[in-house]
Length: 179
Image 1 (cartoon, one colour):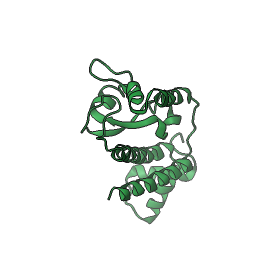
Image 2 (tube, one colour; image 1 turned 180 degrees about the vertical axis):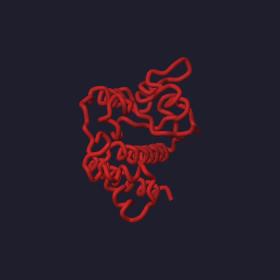
Image 3 (cartoon, one colour; image 1 turned 135 degrees about the horizontal axis):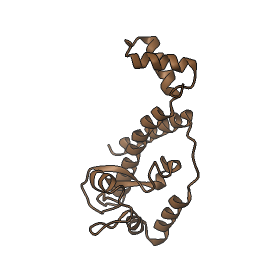
Image 4 (tube, helix red, strand yellow; image 1 turned 30 degrees about the horizontal axis):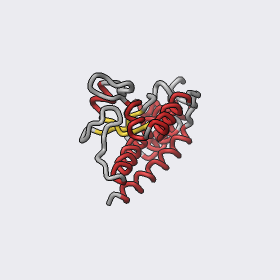
């Protein structure tokens, strides 16, 4: 019962795990099971949020006539991702917070250097990138906000579904603006 919330979910879970042929009833049970599965809801919501933030960042740079650069290393033309200043594991309450996320190169800074927060011999780091991009005062406000908002957030499935709907709507707006 650890993986399910009710007997109905347990039945749905077993049927899904068995690989039962998908008919309308199985699809309905699967939807009911995943609708109440917080892990699945995060799995569905995170990529949508990340896409929205990448598009918002591209728009920010475009409006200023600038080429997009990585917040941590300052390089252009990278494999872009939504880089979190405070990681999802460290401060899950900031997971879907736009103040905590900026355009970052995926393979080097985000993956290889775990966000590249402080920088190294060849990069400026996330913190310095925020200060350079937004100025000392505004950049420090962003850093302080992310470092002080440490309350634990208990996400709910309904909340994530609502957020995902909002993020998808925002993505459509951003994509229509760029046409």
